[in-house]
Figure 1 (cartoon, rainbow, N blue to C red):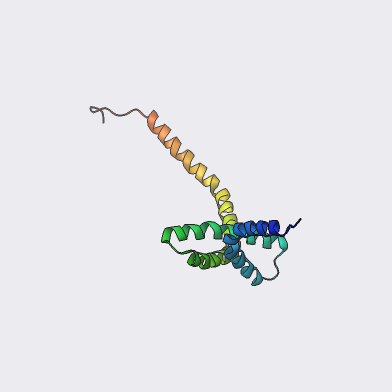
Figure 2 (cartoon, rainbow, N blue to C red):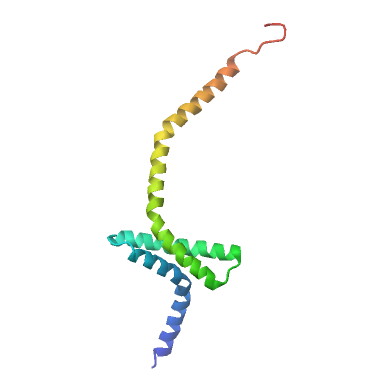
Length: 133
């Protein structure tokens, strides 16, 4: 029994599934090499984000601009690289936005309640008629 043809066929199937993600994987890998000192968890998260952003953004840009696959792969490499590098900034911005939203919630509610109170108070005042005044 020769198992070699079955293994080759399985490898070809796996290759066809993995190949579209290679530019993103390589872009994130290059970005990781340029950032020493990251823990394994942080590297995995950033690598995953780089590959996912690469996959969706490069396909969208290629479709929008009608790029050939080679151009989309080159652009996708840099998208994955930038997504890996930009994750820290995105995380920091999201945290700051969340803190700001929580801090400003009281002011927003106060403003809304004052507006509603003014409208409700305006309805209670009787309107003047033409002869009065």
